[in-house]
Image 1 (cartoon, rainbow, N blue to C red):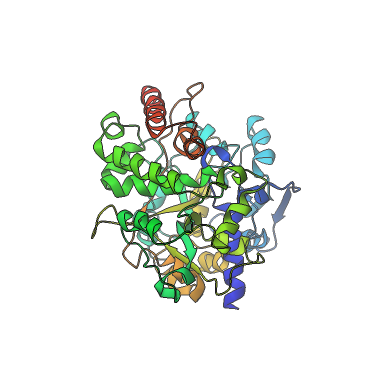
Image 2: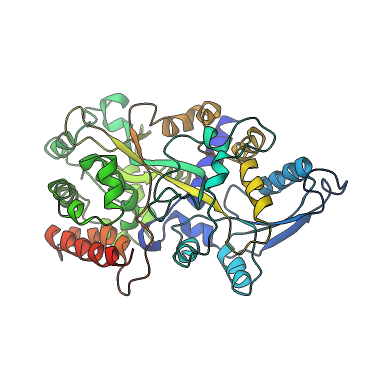
Length: 459
């Protein structure tokens, strides 16, 4: 059973958590497979007409991923039983294609579960248009059926970041949901922990020193988009949490600082030590060939999320191969190590008709009852104590923060659109050009600084 839950969790993460820079494809491509919308009105539990919200109807839309749609139907059933309300549930693999035309026509959903960072960027567009409702007050509301507030249950750090608070202030607009840590994956068999000869590096100096101890290239990446989580964590390492937050708000002093120079220095060294075949495979069709490099000992380390385990489950591998996972090495001995965390979000459109009941529904998503329903499908919420309920396989990844790593959480701040500027493309995909030798690290840094200057003006 543990192995089954582990496989569900890994596959689910591959289809729902990835927010690669610029929408570049990866495992997320599978999530956008065409699928017909499923809309159901679940009335059996609400048919008695009892409860504080009897007679009210709530429209809920949720992205269908490898977690499946059934868990959302169970959530709806549980909510109806507690409130007496009727819930109209819509699920689809391409949820944006279903709900965006509806909302443009004035037919708004009350609650939407759809993460920022997807290729069609629906939440980001709505945030730029001030079309998502503030939900700060949900944190101080009691969880439906429990004597504890939502804010008290959520793990510290999962609110107050630039994903949940996209305007860079104290207001919450996106509620944190299913999450997964990202870091560096490797083959344990190459290192002493798995019977190999190499010492697992704890600092970047130790990391690059491995080049003198092995013929295996140090680095690869599936597509350059996977460097978003990597560079986020690296920003936090070179300058700390406050520095990281300012970087995500395009702060001029931060982006021209010695600390940021250090980040680009490390990225440049990684480019020099990247398997030369990486860029040829770093696209929608061939990214798994780069992931295969780890299994074949053709690269030592690869940035990724834990979905890669399920994604490569049937791939051939070197004798003795065993997945290893770690946070980024520290800048210096004893320094902080960071692992970036992706998480999905639920939110309320500003045009929703039943915002009061929508907020009650959001509180229910953090109930013990709802958390158990989600966890049974492999979806892990940032709720205190949830890691204790995971299989041993997944505790390795979800307990990375228990082992001393710090969590980097947040994304670049939302601004008004700036024509021709895509900060994620500049930060992530320039890596391909540096690896190929068509651009220098100085070119890379200058491009990012120019984009930050333009976006500062648009905040």
